[in-house]
Length: 405
Image (tube, rainbow, N blue to C red):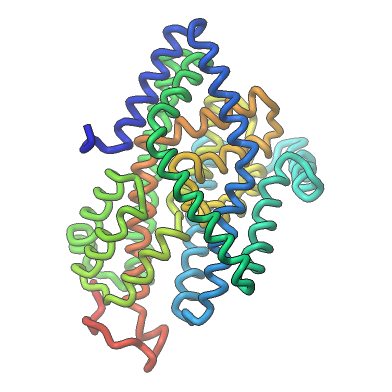
């Protein structure tokens, strides 16, 4: 049992919960109600989790300003790739679910109202405000040793909480499955999960092609994709999919890169930093989940303007999410964000967020984790093959001088 991957347990728990809730909706209705109450509380404390994760990260980056030009370039690349990835998800969602490129009548006015709400205390303002507070606190922590120490205490506390959530993840997903089963029925709930799995797999293929067919040949100067797939991609992607964690995959990722020929100083910096700050595949998929879950599962109208408004926030969230454990991180944050922008009130709001967290966990998380981890490695290959161009005569001597192809 210990050797069984965590994603398999959560998938089994979700399907069992959906079947139980759909088969015994009246008997398990109290459990579904209790799950909604617990989740509603978690949703309310989400802004504090955002600040607790993003604040220390910003402070650490400020305090490590002596890391120099290389770190700045890597961080800039990660921001760019996360932005591009999230736009790919936006475009796929808009095309696949036929969202109008021209705003329908009343959509623009509704979008302006939501933008006004973000600025003046509406439902979505909490998400944006939490980021602003994180930036301010992080900037203070970057200059104050006492504040920085307290931020690190919070960061460690979140990490300890993460271990507890990891232990309780299967029962939690089981309860969420019961809630879905009670609300939608066993067959429809399982059908929704199957659609999310297929949708996640399709996006994983697009993300892979984006790097292997476009970025690596043109920017990374990779000429032998077969060798790349065999020596780097497959061992790293399979391990990341099995663990559902970019952080856990770091040793395998670094070792595979060095075996492929990436110099030590590049692999040792880019991969750990990417595991913390770079979640382009997640940003892509969570953007594309919006039209699927809102429209197909709940029948709520979503247009391209909604996606454009959540786009920059999802990018920021994807770079802060590693401080929050598992499904209660980026999955929860984006679910709350979409619910706020759609103006949902309880109990629909809590049902929407709970369904979002449950349906995007398990097998879909395998595809996201694999895409995130290998994108970190692909980024290391890009920097390795352009290292001398970036730094000229300041390039650090390493164990390999040739580009890897």
